[in-house]
Amino acid sequence: MIAARPCLGVQKRDLFENQEGPNPGGRTCRSWVVRQAQDVASATGKDLPRAVSVGASRASARVLAVTVNYRTAELALRALASLERERNQVAELRAVLVDNDSADGSAERLRAGLSGSDRGGWARLVESPRNVGFGAGNNLALRAALAEPRPPDLFLFLNPDAVLEPGALGTLVRFLESHPRAGMAGPATVVHGALRGTAFRFPGVLNGLDEGLHFGPVTRLLARWQLAPPARSEAHRTDWLSGGCLLVRRELLEEVGLFDEAFFLYFEEVDLCWRAVRAGWECWFVPEARVLHEAGASTGASAGRELERRMPPYWFESRRRYLLKSRGRLVCLLADLAWAAGNALWNVRRFVTRAPRKEPLRFWSDFVRFNLLGQDLRESR
Image 1 (cartoon, helix red, strand yellow):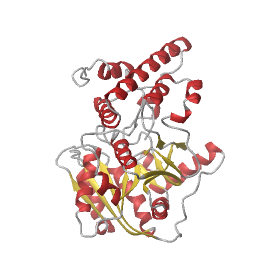
Image 2 (cartoon, one colour):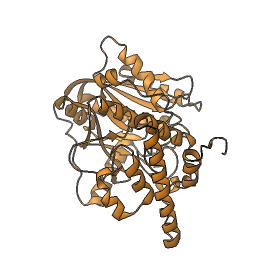
Image 3 (spheres, one colour):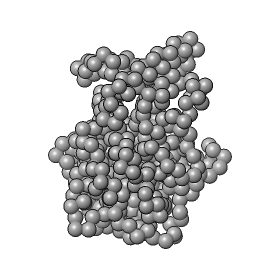
Image 4 (cartoon, helix red, strand yellow):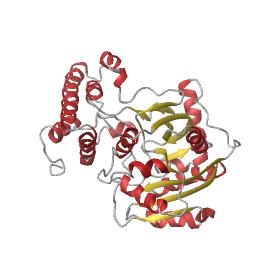
């Protein structure tokens, strides 16, 4: 999920570090969905592509949805409620909530939320003995499911602070059923009434320069390589998709493997998509399906306040791991230099024009210290 966007990568809600945020104003899941949809129409002057109606034919696939929770129990249960509405869209839908050793009572609240309704028949809780991060948390559920005699056909990765619009899951499932080379599909994301791009190009040197420089003519010149191109209204292939809501084929995971657990948080879905594309699978952005994301709900920070926080050290570690793994040392170094040089020029221009900051607090200095000077950011904080 991309919010305040530093260079070359994923901006995901920090669901593995921060405290749980309440459901704002006590709003119900349904009322919040309706309000967000109304906000989108008001802000854009037109409706976004609509998901297939709830009355559409059921998809035949068996789907397992996985949500990894860290101190966001109420949000996770709200995400589960949005999944519950989708049960008439697919032949079989099950859900696994993975609590990543929240140690704040989340596991107890999740257990109560499952036992206090009819969800016990199709949703269950898995408790991790420690906080293993996003990818490893998902893998706990994936390994168990893949070992079943009849494993699911598709896996949906759904963040706790995301809510599926009615019909969204069925739309994604039917798309994969009708596109056999599509290994994964992701929906459009709506944040505070605005359409947020969730289809991206792989990080590299040129889009690193563009991300750091923030200069319109350069962005237009490098549009072909732009990391986060403007959201499009039609389904299309893309390099990688946000892991906040992502539907993936079982066959893809069996061929390329599960999430790389060396990524604690950030870039794990970029790595998974890179391995899938390299193996010949396609990644598709399907805007007819939509997920509503309440930016800041899990962290208690609005989009503006996010800029006042420093990026955690593991963001830099994950970015470095991805670039070394996928592109090699030379491209990694060139991407580092391109972003650092471009952002230095941007900071000069920002100082002269008094433009607002676009990166998180102390991001340039942290970036240079970690990537170019080889300093350990964990020791300096």
